[in-house]
Length: 216
Image 1 (tube, rainbow, N blue to C red):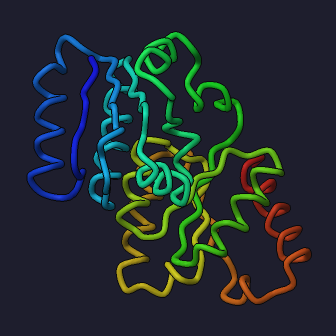
Image 2 (image 1 turned 180 degrees about the vertical axis):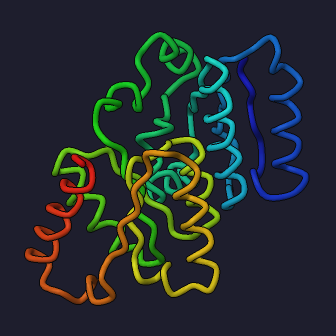
C-alpha cells in the first residue's frame, strides 16, 4: 500500500489521520510505503508515529518504507540517527522493490544493539561514532519518551545512560522499567564527568566496559 502524505505530520489530528489510514488497511496490507515528498514538517510525535508504525509492521511480518522524503524530513531523520532504520528511497518503485531486500536491522542483526540516552547531542554523536566503529549497532535518544519508543521496537542488549538523563527526577523509575522490559537488557550509567574527561581514555574505558557487559 502506498500512502501519499501532504502538509505536516504532527501531534493531534494529523498523526491520528495517518494512523487511521494505515489501520484501515492493516488486515490486508502489511507492506506500506509512505511518500513524504509533500510533507514540510514533522515533530517528535510524528516521528514517533513512524517509528511505532515501523515496529508494528515488522512485528506483523511486514515492513515500512519511506520514499521521496522532503528535505525537512530528511534532516529530521538525519539528526535523530534514524536514516539507518528508515532509509529513504528516491521513488515509489524503488521503495516497493526494497521490500524484497533485507532490512537494515536484518543486515546488522548479528551485532549487539545498544541504545544511548542523553540530552547532549554532542555526547550522543561521540558515543554513536565510537561504538559503531567498535562493531555495535547503535541508536540514540535525546529524552525518556523517545527512549521508551526505541526500547520497544529495537530490543537493545544494552542501555547507556548519560548524566543529562540520570539527573532527571523520573530517570530512575524509567530506567528500571527499561531493565525489566527484557531479560537480557543490561544498563550502563556513564560517569558524571564522562563528557569532560579526556576523550581517548574515556572512550577506551567505555568500550572495555561495554565488551565486558555484552560477553557475560
